[in-house]
Length: 206
Image (cartoon, rainbow, N blue to C red; front, side):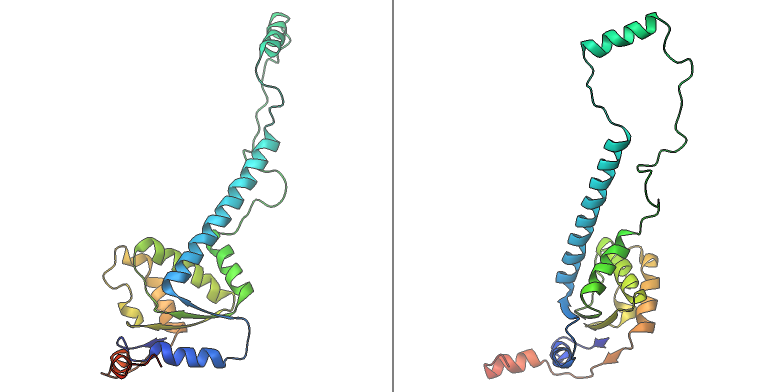
């Protein structure tokens, strides 16, 4: 984790290092881009699970024939002839599907798995923990990413302890912040110069 005041050159140094890492399995993402990708992956996984549940329900409770006059007349015949069962059988299990294991991994696990299958190195520019919902989702996904062997290199204007210091429900994110402190040694860039202003004064983008 590379921290320091705005304009101190954190992103510039990280980009130099990132371009020199000899692996194609890497990605550099800004906070906003990463959060949007995670939300999109969550939505896709949710849609797949809903479709799977819908198919299982259709297979478990088929209704091949709608209620009509023919069905009504048949029921009347069964009732008048006392052919209906005296005791209805009840299923002991209300699982949506009877095939395959009942366990399914969490959505955060699946999203982290998708990330690490594409790249084991994630350069996370402008690390932030803003609103509690996005921060919690981001923390869950990155925690699984770490457990799967992923490596995160980040830049931030704040040290980990200050990322969510005054946020609501801070206790939900404290374990992630503590894990970040252990896994991401912090290097602070001590400078009072804002290189963005220097470049602007020189009239160059380099």
